[in-house]
Image (cartoon, rainbow, N blue to C red; front, side, top):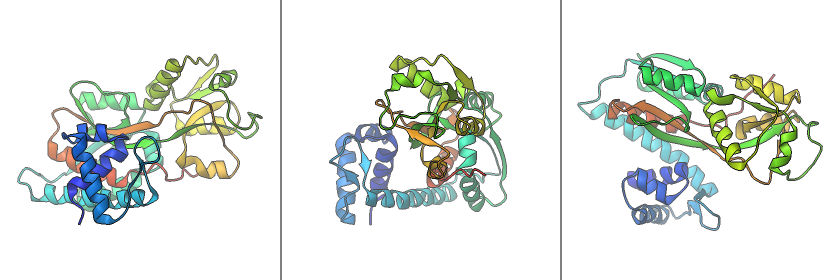
Length: 300
């Protein structure tokens, strides 16, 4: 059977995107992580990473194995939590998530938490990332799940998943086909969630690094509002790709490919630095087992 160390190496390489970063996260060497993957592939008789592509890209079989590995690691964390003398029952959880999480995998997360702790009282908050971080800092929530753009000393962040993003617009807004120069998009109005949003902060910084300035902006704290404005052809927006595939297939949204593609956004579970290791382990494991940003967002 594969070992937990091998499965952890698989998970962290997939989440962080490289053997080097996975080794740093696991507090070991890159050669040790590479050896774990080699042993895992030998045990399973399957290649989990595509070595013909740049970066650590999972093969189709690797993605299937990772999904099962997440379940095994989450179950292991539950067993450890139940067996350790330090693990007190979790009776109440106050936590914050962004709108994208609420629209995609929050129901699966809640179901898993309730299955593990049937008597638990859940108090979720759905707000922009900066507002959630302020609540975490003030101690009014136990943890938050946000884009990785807010970390400060004194807090702990656990990477969960990287979300692919794309420029999108209404089908008739841009007539050009094929790849569009990033600099040419500035002739359109940018629809964005702005500086209160973790995603808005990520892309705002990225556009600044690319030297791109949109003269016309429309900002909203609501992701649903941004989608509505995009479908209405008010402007162009940066949106997570997988969960809007339904609207793309319906012809209500169009993906605009640019010569400089949008970067992925890493989502993390954030805790205060004084939070118990046991709670962090349990919550992070359940988050990883349930987070799925490919769940389609329904649109009437």
